[in-house]
Image (cartoon, rainbow, N blue to C red):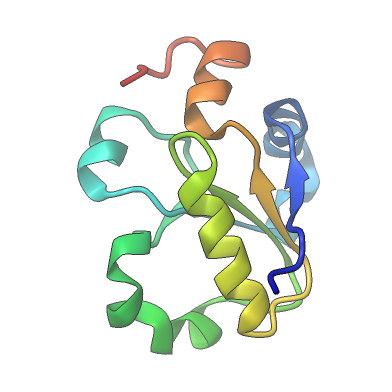
Length: 115
């Protein structure tokens, strides 16, 4: 049984991106490279969910499992799956960005293209 994953809003993400304490947060974008070429938010590390088998061994060496980790995708479905996987790997502070980059573009920064 999967446990519920914590969510954060795009408004909270915007506040986080503006704050000076941003170095205490890991930002993951699990979309495909071609999606990121269309629309992106600076500061996110791209780890495509579809390539999990290729990078899963590296995740624990590249990311801190105890640091707050915010996960983004297009609408919030793939990022929720990534959150579940990270929790299963021992990550303790993972949040799904509700609505994904689509909501961020709609509500926060309409200079980010929608697709």
